[in-house]
Length: 64
Image (cartoon, rainbow, N blue to C red; front, side, top):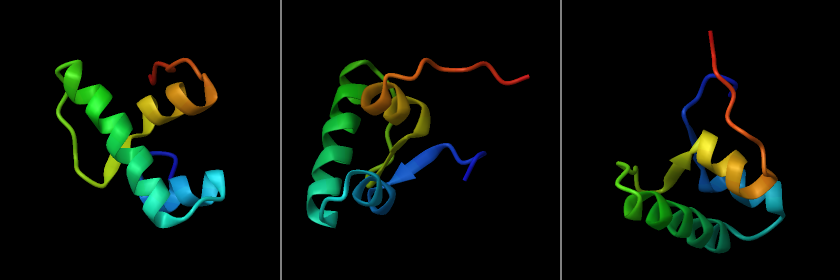
């Protein structure tokens, strides 16, 4: 999963110990935030980088 760009609702459910329904709601909320900022989104998945920033407070790391 290290190189994947998106996190699925199943991963969110596992990370937070919530139902898939709640996880989809969380993904939808994060995607709405990204969309408001002008980013393209993928329904049912959220940017891995944004997910880590918003849920764990991790700053993005530059690959290289």
